[in-house]
Image (cartoon, rainbow, N blue to C red; front, side, top):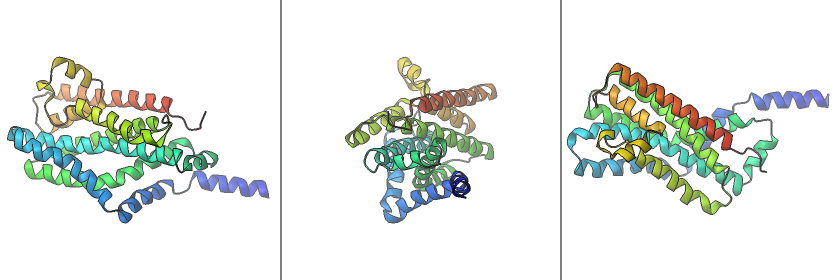
Length: 256
């Protein structure tokens, strides 16, 4: 009887409502501290405000679209902070390791919970994009796909880095250094053609570069052909798959 009960509990834990539970974690973060929903909105809008003042007006729609990808990329930094804090300070990851919950669902749960606070910023940016230019349905689909791929990829990168940190003091500087650098290298707020050749070559290794090119092409913000757009989409998925594979390989579920 005890064995059957244990099997039943194990099966329930493996098929329980993990994602709604992690979504509740993300929502409670906003409910208890509303400013946590304001910060994701302010960060990209600070860039947009100053870029609107100093850059040509015709680039503003491109910059708004880039702000959506920048917001999504930053979810990876939040995943890094949460996962590292749970592992190093609260020792909560040890509980999940000892539980029937598998590693993949745990990681997706953290990524999902951190996407919740970013959602209001993405909605506001989408409204602003629709205000500054007409957005065809196909472009919305491209934006949605690109946001999803970047969210999964950079959440995986953040989680992989979190598993390698040794001290809570490393969370803030390493997270900001990595994700700020990745955001600057990618042509999110400017056309890739204006970058120096060496910068362009470095940017070509990042999934956000191809997400930006894919979105800009769908919105008609850069001169491109259907074949080139298909190439950008293919390189987006390829670079994302490589990034996720490396992140999963680097991630440590159990302490050595």
